[in-house]
Image 1 (cartoon, rainbow, N blue to C red):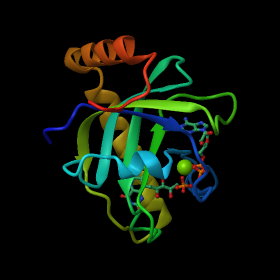
Image 2: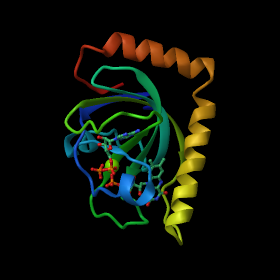
Image 3: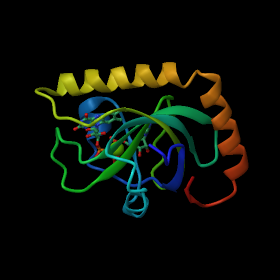
Length: 154
Ligand SMILES: Cc1cc2nc3c(=O)[nH]c(=O)nc-3n(C[C@H](O)[C@H](O)[C@H](O)COP(=O)(O)O)c2cc1C
Ligand SMILES: Nc1ncnc2c1ncn2[C@@H]1O[C@H](COP(=O)(O)OP(=O)(O)O)[C@@H](O)[C@H]1O
Ligand SMILES: [Mg+2]
């Protein structure tokens, strides 16, 4: 995917409220304006990278881009599960993400448990891959040079 790494930023909006309640895995959802501006060659699927809320600490993240086939959403979404325990929700805060790599396509599952298990595997894979020196360097390069700018690009 030639547009990776891809950096984007937007205010966290509400989704269907399923992430925390049904899956036990909250996802911070990006607004339509950010989803619509994704480069065409970033296909739907599951990605990993780095994220920061409100310009705060940088954490590992996994992201889902697409129509959530298990739920048959009709609107494309971009949602990040940040691998960190937050004290409270952060709707309305600015979320910055650096998307670095692709994990797998989105798919449907026979049960909620299988979807949850697949997401836990994604989280483990992201944890492992983001420890590489190359991805740590990209984190430092992108977040220190772009912290004060609004952008949707790479
Ligand atoms: C790492 C990750 C992988 C995901 N994989 C899938 C998938 O394969 N199929 C699917 O239907 N949804 C997938 N999802 C999306 C979840 O279904 C979605 O985050 C959940 O429904 C919460 O949506 P909400 O923010 O609207 O509440 C994934 C989400 C994450 C964070
Ligand atoms: N580790 C986390 N990663 C992502 N969002 C989190 C996390 N911890 C708390 N949140 C909060 O949970 C919200 C997402 O929960 P979710 O159940 O997916 O609801 P929604 O459908 O409104 O996106 C985020 O917008 C954010 O405010
Ligand atoms: Mg969500």
